[in-house]
Image (spheres, rainbow, N blue to C red):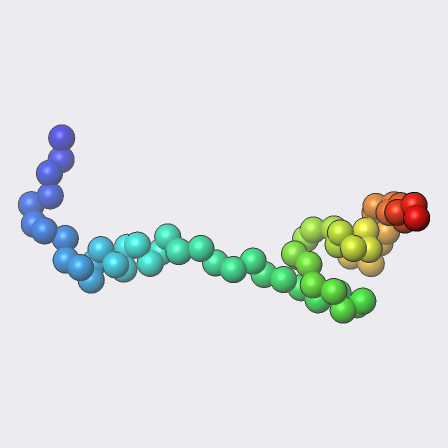
Length: 61
């Protein structure tokens, strides 16, 4: 089993851990002005790249 020969410094440890941080999701604004994830169907309108791909039903009152 491998054992480190020297103690890992705080700087080296923190630089390695900095690569594991999570990035924020990249939101895009479409023509209607709403924000949604890129490469994903807009849940509010059901459109993807200016094409209607989902048929949304209006809620019954």
